[in-house]
Length: 103
Image (cartoon, rainbow, N blue to C red; front, side, top):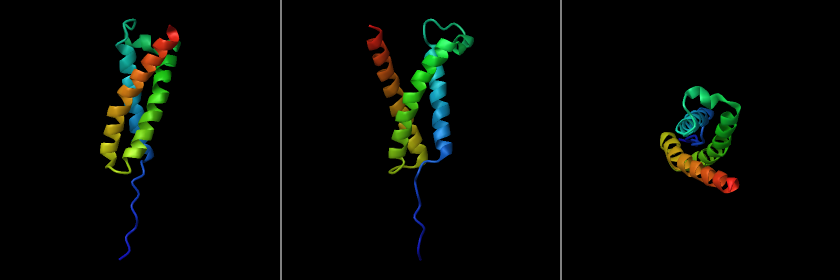
């Protein structure tokens, strides 16, 4: 019998899930900021710009990690690994970059 080659390529749904989790993480990061008193403080133009500044590189890193991990692991494991590695790594790099530019 000839078996069809199964592709372990990530789906749009997995990238959507990654995007939602990263967005929630960005809002959480913004919420723990010392200047934020209420959730509505996060919806100012300045804070939304900062959240987007954190979201975009984090999503790119996590998406790249997810596509790389999905070649060797199950989709659920790949999503989890990409988020556990990508979010703290990218947030830390962005914080260091912004603090460096601020000085």
